[in-house]
View 1: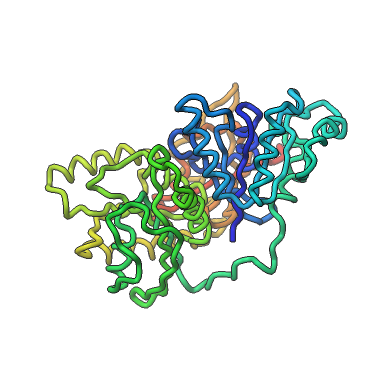
View 2 (view 1 turned 90 degrees about the vertical axis):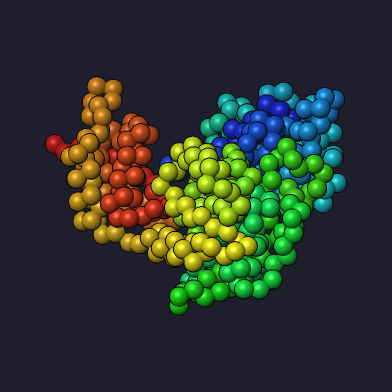
Length: 437
């Protein structure tokens, strides 16, 4: 099982900086769950080929105001869903009384607790940690989230090698599809209709599905595994139900184990920011994405036109995603939905020869040369494929580190269009080549 690591501590101790350090900078769109300054943020990360989910929290304070109470509820849910707790402290402020109280509180949770003393930049880590030794228990690590020092040692303890308890390798012949979406979007009804059974519990009460459930089926000779995940509700709607909070991390775990993510959107409820955030998280994880615009049978033509217009606005960041109108109750559109999933899987698994990549780059650069930046032009000399999930193009040349995001999007979108890869995320890795004399 992919572990969940929660970053905890007082506000402004560097949790978000550490969150960004752990997740790293990537070409794919980064989308946080709405309300990032007050709510939890989730991101899939990787350390030495060991994936994990990292959760950032707004901060633990005394809950006097309504906002502070809401923030603490979010933090409590992060603690409940986590496998490993990381308490982040500020070396510049020293071990203050509130840190000791937080540490004592987290010790009672019965979960592994690591203490990351942040902002040790330019100081002797041993001397800094000596001041925090009075906490008594919990492994201490001196780190600089900004510069990255000490973070690798922290991760080695936080993400242990779990060879015996690791999940078995999935069957490579099966297409794994993670079905994700907000609660009550119709995910379970959709899967039940595909299976022609009532395998999954269907209820109008949001949040019925608490855990991910794997179900197998065959479609036109292709074997599939559909993973029905718990609905992900806007954080402002979640109160004291820790199981509801757990569903977010569970869904991300399911996405990590899948090759394709199916984002189910309730067209009757309307397209929300949360729907776009879920698609962005799946793309950020390198998974191909298809959108099931569900319950379209409940809308008249005018309502449907308005809903699709709103969908287009919300998904401007990923206008290349295939969208299928569906009705889980009537079964309309489900055949096309599975066809799209198969096409996405096959497209995401494609391999491109180095000549194919270089021929593409030559045509793309001829039509739209890279811009001049800081007095010089970016030079793309050659490229090759670097992997799948996401489909990665490795570019070699000079001044590539200055390539604007707009030109990166141009290359990715053109490659996607040239090779018919709708819904497939494409990442670019730029490497500097030595100048020739």
